[in-house]
Length: 378
Image (cartoon, rainbow, N blue to C red; front, side):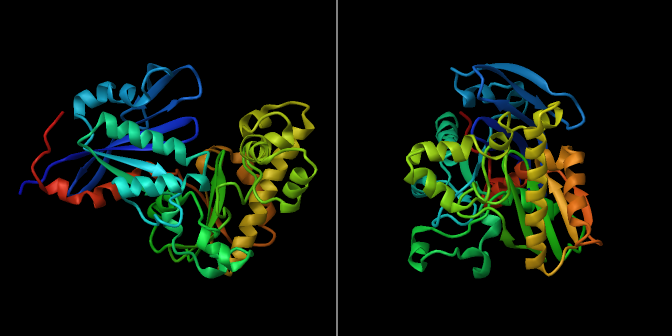
């Protein structure tokens, strides 16, 4: 049978934004053709896209009342390449039931829905986009790529949480997140890999992962993406007694507490200004803004040091994510705090290539499509 090219659309969806990319998959691998993004939090926004990372973005207006998936598929790039044959979706959490990347069918969709309570800020949005893609592209294969997959299985020493054992059956364990990002860093590093590697994915969501000989053995986020280091609007690790106090004293109910932990804590809570590290760095005469940045740096350094203990030392610390890649001052703060304890470690700054990893897994899962005749077009 003659091999053919398969178009893979990757959808990396956040709570209010989307990063997408289009790859051509052949028997030789996947090749990036287009990439872009859109901000869905504003009523009048734009889709930005480009063919090459060295060229500026082209913008196309998009109105929030219109279908975002239909707006995406009307971009000129799909007129040039043809409609996607495969759509790969980033899904933050698959719960106890979905531990590896897979093709989406009815049963998988039900299991993703059941996992929504593990990550209520992320999974419902991903489900919405899966349904949009199924409706807009009924003949395309849909693939779920899970942020938790890279960490499975974690050693029991890291996986098991210090709570009654029976709760594990309910999914109360450490899952770990930013797995697609971590996998992309491992792929980019030269062989042989550093034996004792820590990846710091620092953005609005942030986590650190200990990677030993290419495998995740511990990570800062736990059962949900709320724990670990301080984040833009999430607190990271916090005394659970504080949460009980707030509930017991009537300062908030469960819904208000959840909203606070997801949207009003972290950098935003400390600074009383913003969860955006760029805004905090630019704020003049704002002591709380500086305190927020200092606490963030210390939180990252403290967790990196803890993961170095798990690894038995630290050979390399890789920074990635929006803050990790672009904020040199923050990187310097973190390294300065770690260097006295670990004088010999190397630092690298590498881009998170989650979309590439998603496309590679989608190609693997749909490999028969590449060696068969083309599917009928819409």
